[in-house]
Length: 407
Image (cartoon, rainbow, N blue to C red; front, side):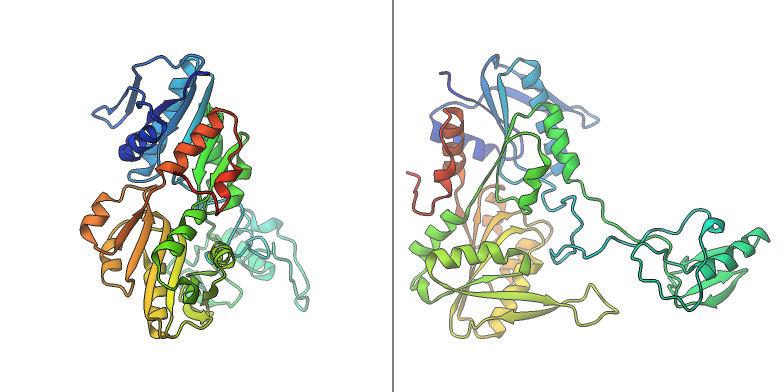
């Protein structure tokens, strides 16, 4: 059986070379460039006919450019008669945007969002004034108000709904009419692009996807092809076991409710205590303002924060501050995908975090030079072993075993 052909995108060439070194092969030769108008050009310099091709491209840096580059490379291999094309995406882009409607805290919506204002107010059915309507699909403006507004519209009067940031008034001919039932006509709704990303990859010709620690495991259901979602939890557990003194006395902490399952799985396997930081909304008039609340005892203990993605690092640094205020003696942070955009590195440097252990699914060379708190947890061995096993038809379930160690 022929060996795999490994092609690398431009997002993380160092990881591509490390994976190829583990497999004992050379990366496939290709040329990736951009025209003056930033269009992407891909050229393959070796034959991939009837071969298994693995294209490694992480969703970091210029995410949209790198993702489109991956699509073009997949299409190029399919056009060149490759037998199977596997996209290896260590950090999957857009994985924080599933199609199911979820709140910012990670909890699902109990009911669908309110409907927008109907385009033809005349057809809105009327209802008795003393009837209480609890239908979640009712318009944001009561039918009684609509009937009055529609009559005003017939007389050529100008009506503005929430135009000047006012949520409880209607402006008719320049005069404001107070009404507590009136709200902005359109309910803001975040677009979810999960299905689109999955369909783009499969439409380009991807036969298989390999990734690690998807932010939302439900993302796998959007694909029509097999998806192997590798886990970094076994390697994190081994790091805690070997590098943190008296780890049994330490506490595993989840910085938010969404990561509780991830953190508890490590705590159960290592027989450690667990704590949770909960975002509590105490002011209904300011739903975006959260009060952090610690659930668990961390006084005079070493704390280990577990998270899958650190982008702006606001969550992880605020969690470290709360742990410090509650008496934690030392604070570690284990992060799978450390994107660290903007001034996130400076924020970590000035925080109460003592050590930040991150994987190299995203390039970390610049981050290490800026901050002395970072330590790298390599993932090249994990992806190389997954590629080898998939290529030769072996099971990858062994890679999820905490006791299995890559040599």
